[in-house]
Length: 126
View 1 (cartoon, rainbow, N blue to C red):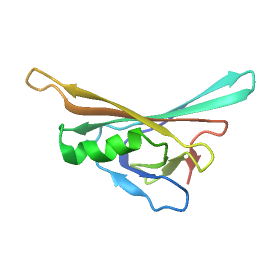
View 2 (view 1 turned 90 degrees about the horizontal axis):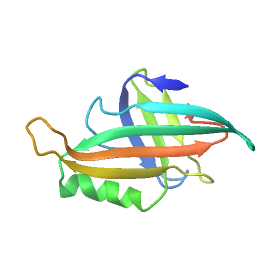
View 3 (view 1 turned 30 degrees about the vertical axis):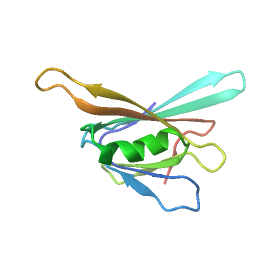
């Protein structure tokens, strides 16, 4: 299992030929987890990047809603400036989110987002 400490940047693009676009997220809310599991067909690596986006606003909803409907290639940068690429043109990563509106003081108000990618090689370290 591989875990990176602090994620400082998350970016996406739809094809390898595109340029990366940054996703604005709540600082210190993201982490990268990669698990490997032996299957009948070999080893399957599942990489997950959960993070939060504060506030339920149109400006934060539109980019994430667009990504929800399309698979993409993601690049995640940790505090040591190591980058991890999740996905390629053949097998792209998926983004899902849930909206949470807390009713008590100090509760979280925004989206809990998770990027998931499964492959035989795991996240590509650049």
